[in-house]
Length: 470
Image 1 (tube, one colour):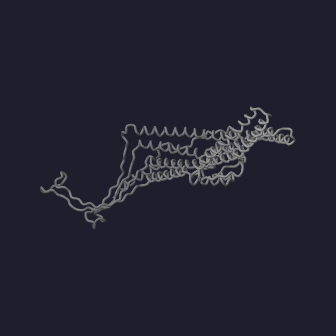
Image 2 (tube, rainbow, N blue to C red):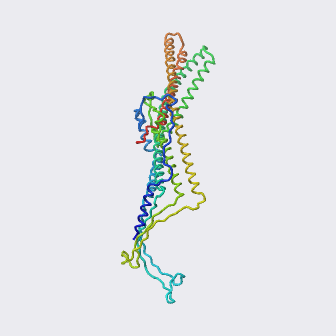
């Protein structure tokens, strides 16, 4: 039987192992976020939710987002990485438990009469010839005296968290990219309407100019100027399908389908995008999964330092086996046939050529690298929000100016039409007056698309409604 002294020694060792963990404990670094964004952030407006695109009430966008979430290869790959990390974590956690193996054997053997190890009695070699049967259970368990196994589980858990957060970041990026591409397509549809009206106006102006030139009431210079304006409008109209096709191809790729299968309809013009509450810079850690992922990677690297430090200390493993062995199967499970061994083994590194020291230095350098990477990512996140806010503010100011231009030029066109009705001016004067409002309508369509693109950028920069509790 196992001696009581051995059992007490093992119990004491296990108790000591429970309270000894090498390496630094992880502490999240300070975000060092400014008190406010450089651009004026809206304090009111819609708060982003997980499925943030639903707030726009666009059934077509909702369908595209659902399709992307279901069929995107990017999200499928991210989900597979999460499952792989979960399996790795389960394997690491298994090292915290004892390992038990059970086996059996049936061996037919005969010893050599000519071997130097063969016993001799009375000048005759004693050989053995027969069948031996055995069953045995073995036990192996590393006593985590320095917390190496604990740190391995901690690092694996942090890596699983980082992989899960990477999948969340991929979801945020995908949904924002789908919305941005969809809104770009809607803006191109609005631009196409304005551009066609502009092209028709230029065509009418050219007809009038050609008539006046044929009548000798205008110069070649006037005719060629109107012809050039019509050619420019024709070029823009001809280029529009190319631009629309590129956006359609982008949407199809993001939603995991062929572009030939994608059918979109623009029934209304893009409205003014709603205002989204940006919050405070300090809230970005709770808003953006990529920042949380960076901290999880830092956590995993910190745990690796403890693993590297534990390599300098002895490792203790508890091993044992119990079973039965007999030459006769009928006597296999009997007290005389039993056998067992039980006891700890210790391994102490004496010389490894500086490998452990190098591994420790590398682990500490990884912590420094990931800490710097987190700070860099935090600065980038702050910049992305500021860029989106500045873009929105700038586009809004430009929109206001263009709306004033449209109002004034529309009034001028009304006056020109009134004078034409009274016979005071020619129709060419009317078409000339149409040039500015029609060009402004096209510019407004482009600006509206830029506003929505900046809205998508802001959604993405704010983390797309992600929260740690989701």
